[in-house]
Length: 250
Image (cartoon, rainbow, N blue to C red; front, side, top):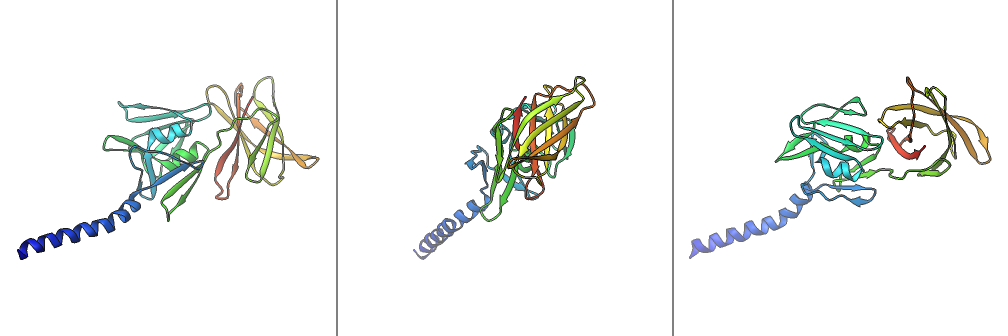
């Protein structure tokens, strides 16, 4: 009888201990990811590897409006939209973004048959802004989806601006972007994309004042006959990282 009582007591103690520890273990392992304040739902939980958050590739890419595909023969992820093309090969320490080689802090990998990619790399190279709350193990991504027409005013926190016109020389080698903003010290980067996602870029320069706004101009030089269809506007955030703040149709 004493043996039975001892066994029952041990089981109760173990169950009680598990009931105390389980929430802590679960909370420690769970990572939440928000995109523009909306919680992303993953069928496989994200995890931390070498200080980087790894997530299933399809969910994060599709949430940021990139079409995705998977090549099983060479174990490569492809993601693209009108202005971004990202190619990530499993196990490699680099990726290609719009044809340019970019270093990965942590390679993509396959775990239990699922492909995981480093979240920060994917989000930032798509033009998003990423922050991490270590206390709650939460990732916050801010990403601009809106697309504007020439003359429309766009906003980024306290900054407001507009592209008024885009002039292109007859040979397509010089693109001049003209616009207005409410700040004269803000660095703006303009990226022009053609149909094949080729890119040319330039920085803004303040050209004068017009009422309560500052007129700016950005001259983009292309090495070939360039026919831009989209202009993306980027600026530096508080962490000195370049983030997309608007997208204009031409």
